[in-house]
Length: 409
Image (cartoon, rainbow, N blue to C red):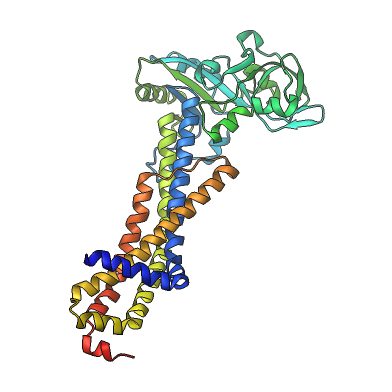
């Protein structure tokens, strides 16, 4: 009964000073909103990348130029031995593809290269990423599904043929069937032999990238690169009966026969997700440290307002003590009031986060997710702040002498 009465008195006091109570909660609201918002955005991005990576195909690995440590052994974001190598197209060779295919457990492997040049039809430009790939990439990147036409084959080697993604089709042809029609990439005229279906099993971020692809035969792409291979990725499909990590170690050992350890990196879907998780966790810690300042400010604000409340209600405290209220009952009343102010601030924060997430979802095409941990953290921090910063005013109120309190004016 004492707790129920204390809660009623707390809400009555907060309601009687609505503006002051809201301003008291402001620091707490800002701090909790910042942390929970970042956590929900991070969770949304991780889910999106997970869908995207999963949509690219199962049991796959990629070999890239440059020693990029995405395992986190050199810090949250990993490390780069030589950043220039990451941009180089002269490190990975066709011989690497051939040797990787021979490794036990590798089902197939294929090369990719980036192609420069604008994609346009007449005067209409399309936003696109142009890739030159080996035909086996259809098997490696199973997220690429043909809507109409066909994928490139060995017979297309060196020919000016391409496959376009659905967003490129929309920009250049609207609802018309582009198969058999021609567009320009740079100065070269290219015939469209097929187009990809809309991404379904990928996240919103990744689907944008896959949908804007333009794919041509690898040998054709070399014409755009001054007749150089310029391999920037080697895609590897691991046989279903083999452990992907074990095969990746074999690939690394094989690559070291022809390259130094600073020349290349081999990573899997799991490596990408772990690296992303490490980066997001560091960002969360960084923002949390900044948000802690707001939480302290909010806590100090709660303590100040409760001290003012104790002073304003000195006669009330004296009267309650005179009719039998114990020190513990007075302490509990003011402590509960402090906790309620904090919890209300936490609840308002979650409402703000929910609204913010909807705006992000509509504007940035990301789906933030508030996890149960985030809900628990928000409310837990609110209660903790209420207890820590409400304890001193509550103790002060409970120690007041009833006779002096009744004389207070």
